[in-house]
Length: 403
Ligand code: HEM
View: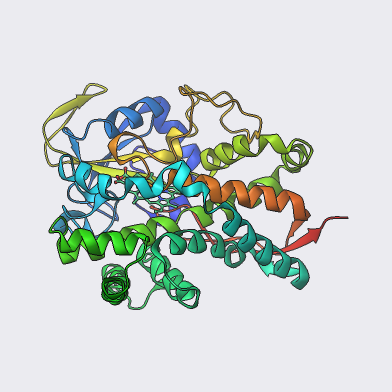
């Protein structure tokens, strides 16, 4: 166990990482992951450390990158330019530009639209009988983020293909080339080009969507052209590549725990709690990464300036120091500020889209509980190979209608 490689995508398939993380939390809470799939890095696995590291951007910087991957050492096009890869004060300026579009109040306006999208896709899936549930629920997040960016429906499939490739580029299904780095770069490049076309259109015919806002910010000199395009990239990626995996992981959790499904259907007021529990349970964003900007100490070890620290949400969300019986999936688990899940991260980079994701998952669970009495697994889930995202690419299920 002392030389486990947490950067190895194969380690993260299914339930395997939980045993490893429990061992690290108990025995080596600041673990030096030796050179392996990637150059060495520190790993933080306890809840409290996870929160504290993310709240301290002066010591732990996001400026180079915020995930493991081949871009770690050379940086990539977005380093130091995007909301997720900048530190204060630039990060604060970028965040202020779009914050008002993501408040719970602004996001609530999308509810009727999202409900109609989910009702339609569930009705189709029920009619078909068998379906790939991962494809079915993909419509929900792409609808949400596309509404905010005013991306037309005919381009949803393209957006999903590009964001899946950009985030899942370790996985052979999404490889355009045999080189992980080139795969991601090609997909990002196409997203940037797509956004360039949208910006030109919005300049001629502005609306109240986020792309129009970004175009105005570029014209006002607040964003460079590159920063404007990269903003679109991160919003489309963040919007698409997490919530759908939480939804699929949620369905699988309910199939494994039918008592929890029965409870949710009998007590629909538990839906907001259940959303929190499925985020804790699935931790769609497995980790975030920070680079030490100065020397610091943790658990008696020295982290040198320039070394990378990976904060594992997968582990923090199962920390028995904070959660009672963390290995139990419990839709009635009480929520409190001390024991809230950290699936959205914490500190200044706390997920910008958290209110959108929560609304999407609330609508998802409400509509699932209203229209589906149960689900049957028709084959093993096809998991995404990634140390970054906890996802299921495909899962064939049969949904049973009510009554
Ligand atoms: C279940 C769904 C989601 C999960 C688990 C999730 C998770 C996260 C996490 C862990 C971070 C922190 C990154 C860091 O600290 O480096 C983050 C940031 C971010 N998320 Fe999400 N996210 C979700 C949904 C969304 C959605 C729907 C959007 C839509 C726009 C979004 C956009 C962003 C953006 C732009 C950031 C960067 C914020 C910043 O650096 O200030 N996310 N997300």
